[in-house]
Length: 182
Image (tube, rainbow, N blue to C red; front, side, top):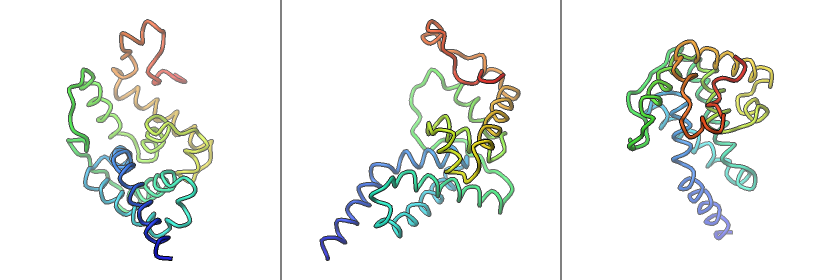
């Protein structure tokens, strides 16, 4: 019996060690504030720890992401305002796309919380429309309409994003995804 408890704890600790940075980035992209992202992730990991025995054999990262997004929406409903941070949680690397990242960050900050959540889930987390709908607790149609509205709004507030195509990708005639459904 004691071995089972330590195996469960060891599995939980291993999961947290391997997934915490990616989950923190996702939380930051959703809420736009490093401190709030840390709080959201801490609360989500606590909820995961309480349900670890029933979740560990499934997909614990999906369970934590769903908690993150639902808790973030609950927080937005309570607060009805956004707090943006000037610095992201990851260390700044030398990046030729720095200006583009800042433009995208500022543009995401102008979106309503639900639209931002849909974009983060669809394009950062690379979830399907169905998985995004399940994570947010909405219909697939809502995901599609929120995504369409968010991309349209991004094109309005940051036209540089729609025009930016990296030179290496330009030769392959690929776009950056903001041109979808113009």
